[in-house]
Length: 331
Image (cartoon, rainbow, N blue to C red; front, side, top):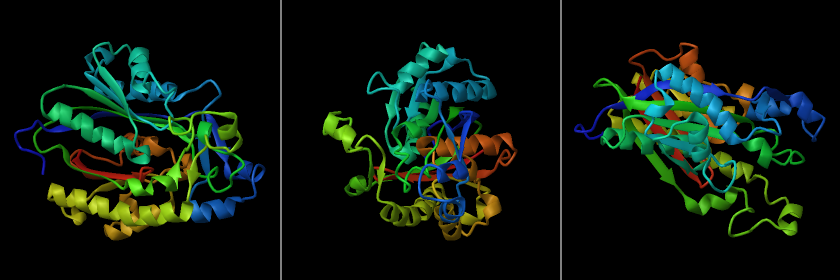
């Protein structure tokens, strides 16, 4: 349970943006040895969005943030904090959050990036919520933004079918008593780091002709191992967040999971005894957008009326690190 002396913090507005270009399974059939039926059966993905050559993560984040701020009725100048969760920053530094701060004109906001792969959005929510709950800040913008197409090897049929680009954003602030975030559950298992990574481009393996030739700047994933981890952790992380919140599974109105694979989502639903109509699923349209997946799904759920005032919403994700995160909130 969150400390009762802290301010109740919730989501004041949501927004999303996905690039215009669509990459379908049928187009991938022309690029690698795969087919639509195989991809849909094993992942549930039918298409994904691809950023243009000119677009970077901050551009996607900017579009999503404008909508979230508008929906929250908050001006950029009122923001105290900007956190961008991403594994595809515009550059090593400055942070994508600083670039976004400048684009928005949010002159008084502190800004930093957070790297926890697909769990990054929930990690960022936990950070921002605590800043507001303690009274340090009043308003925070939390964004999950990714250009995964820029680090995907389109000759690797195991990974290129999975990933897409996009951004989702939320504005956090104080909400009425009884509403807002009720718990967070965050975790990591660094021993699993080698299972899902981009090996080159950092201080361990700087860019070189050898790293380029070895395709070490692209996403590597040990698919079956990551799948087993995800199936185990998604349900248990959500259960632990519900336990911390003192809320029963039967009280959940909507599950908003990381959109990686339909079979992983179905296993989480089974563990939580939830039917599919209580789950926001959009991976068929966007694929895996890493830190962008949950906030894009959340924004779509809010836009389409899938979430009503007073609903109990559970967010849950897993990602490279290996990391996981879950949160329970009352809308």
